[in-house]
Image (cartoon, rainbow, N blue to C red; front, side):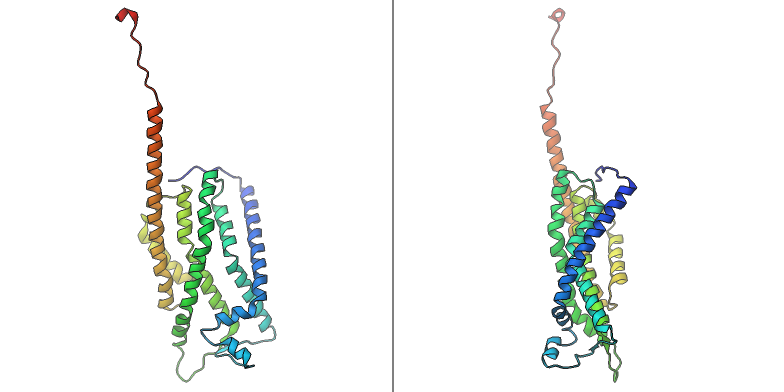
Length: 275
């Protein structure tokens, strides 16, 4: 099911894209300031699978597990990177909505009302993916550190480690937006539930390929922890879309029946000659 959309000149599309990119960038900057302010709390929380940074700071220790910072600009670069990635993650509901508003333009009032679903569901689904990544993180770190040869120390640059962790959280959060986009597109009539589920083999292959290509970890456990929930969410979104299509078809049928019943069939009046 594809609804008719109004056309927009290319320059207008580019202007709209520029405006939405600017809005997204401003949201990221605002939340990056928050990440800068709470920088120490963020790194202490995210470094917990490797070392207890808060305890090391309390004891004035110069070491924290296998993590270290190198270079004169290392601490500044680390804080800038953490603040920026934290801004991207925290501002995800805002720039995700800007993406949605750009790919689904010219919505009618009813379709905009249905878009409330996207706005209300995008944040919890992103948070669900980010939370899953946080719980998968210790297992992934243990598995990856387990490949270190015996009698060798595995020293990890702090900025590389946090870059890995924050990218893992970001990828999981974005991936969990898949069902939100699918159901939202179905609600505004762009795609049907059958169109979602018909290429299910290619969809499973695409999900697996996405996880393999963009997941910052190469261990099978972390990849399966993302791919398996995504496959279930894909089929769940398709099932919800089928129910929406069924309800929409039933509503259209009832409207057609009511309109047909209102049509009066006028019988011709017999002429006097036939009496």
